[in-house]
Amino acid sequence: MTRSASSTAHTTIDPRVWVPMTRVLYRLHLAELAGGRQMITDQIADLGLVTRTERLVMAVFSCAAFHWVVMGLLVAAATTCVLTLIEIVLMIDACVLIGGVALGQEY
Image 1 (cartoon, rainbow, N blue to C red):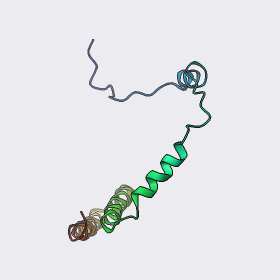
Image 2 (image 1 turned 60 degrees about the horizontal axis):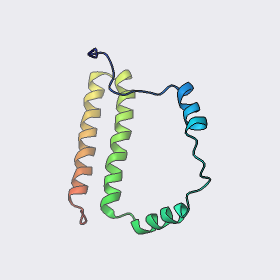
Image 3 (image 1 turned 90 degrees about the vertical axis):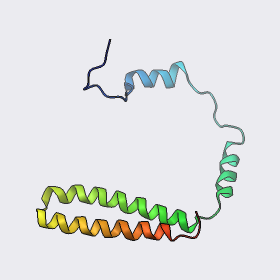
């Protein structure tokens, strides 16, 4: 049997199936994983401080997410002239951020 073009690739589990499976049939009887909290604390300490490059990448992704949301809101209410100005601002933002990452000392 073949799938139709309208079917989605992901599946969701029905809560009526998930709850009995996770709470009754395959219940996890561990209150705490021995040494788990210490292992996570050690791994976080091993990461060290956030580097300049990581901060720049965080800024690029934050700006991209912000502009993605704002652009969706503005498209609904903006005219073509305003959209052109917004697109120019977005391109300038992208060039500045990408240039900042390219000039970073750490890779």
